[in-house]
Image 1 (cartoon, rainbow, N blue to C red):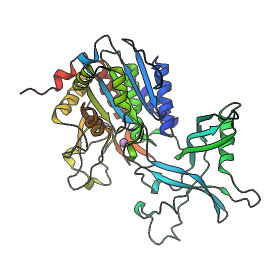
Image 2 (tube, rainbow, N blue to C red):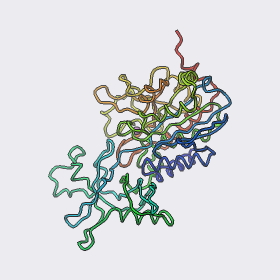
Image 3 (tube, rainbow, N blue to C red):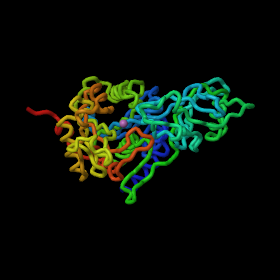
Image 4 (cartoon, rainbow, N blue to C red):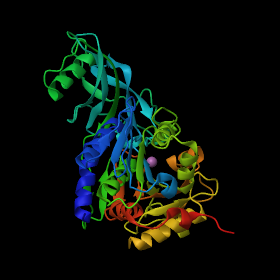
Length: 440
Ligand code: CO
């Protein structure tokens, strides 16, 4: 795979995945196209050596794995982890507010979103709808309006004495997208709009009544290469669909020398506690089913290694004081190893050395990121999964700017570099366990 193919695929993945549900569907399609077999959680599994499988939960998280002829308890698993969700505005159950000549859509803020970038954007809505069919059964479908259907206009500078800061924005009153003008004769009905959209997206869909929804606003501007020399990629949800796409590509394109796995979890941005989140039972349950024998299961975990991939922060040229310059990653200088003394990142000196060696083998550059000591540090699924399973973990990520904005920016080589590291991780014939075990 060439860098340009990787980047084109990444842009498509971003543009077709406005929500975690859509990201999981995009992942599922790529895996199916590469002959991975779906294992429904509610059915009996029959796993074969040299098989390629995937499991989904809540249709928003996905685990895929490839097995070799070698026993898992001898080799362990090489795992790449990432998350499918991103901060966004989530539509409330009864959202429409009809006043002041406008119909607006009530929202809650999902995750730690930067709020100011949501103003003056051409927004659309996507997510999941659950409806009752005419025979009384319930069914769920994805929905995506795709076109611009709402906007949150800024307050004009002449009316705003102080410029609006993210922390001053009232999430209940001031972030409410405007959907249309009021029509006093016809009170608006949100489910009618959803019904019409579903009928457009699905042929002859059988709906008696739409019961509920999980819908999110998103920016319709597509992700793209940018900068006069195309040095950057800008787009929504690069945190963390970039790492999801990288993980999928790495496991699909690798010639499996090892037992390999990717885990893409929902709900990272809100703390990961859910059936499908990294603090939930999804990974544990999947490992228990692959290796029902406790002894083999534990031996496998002790020999496994997780690369937790989630974006890091690039040195921002306009805000250089926000960084420790010895540990501030640069664009197109490779993925960054993320370190934190309080284990907000799971990296230790052994897993860091492993990743640095891996990058050397893959012939790509690598950097290190440490937050300024006087500033709070973010976290990832890495510490959660390593604490839950005992699997040795390294936190790495592609350096980015504007994390949690409606549009984020990365270097156009760095996703490709991370892909090469992950692909090498799955392909190299070394013994991970030997390389990362502690000798006296
Ligand atoms: Co993230």
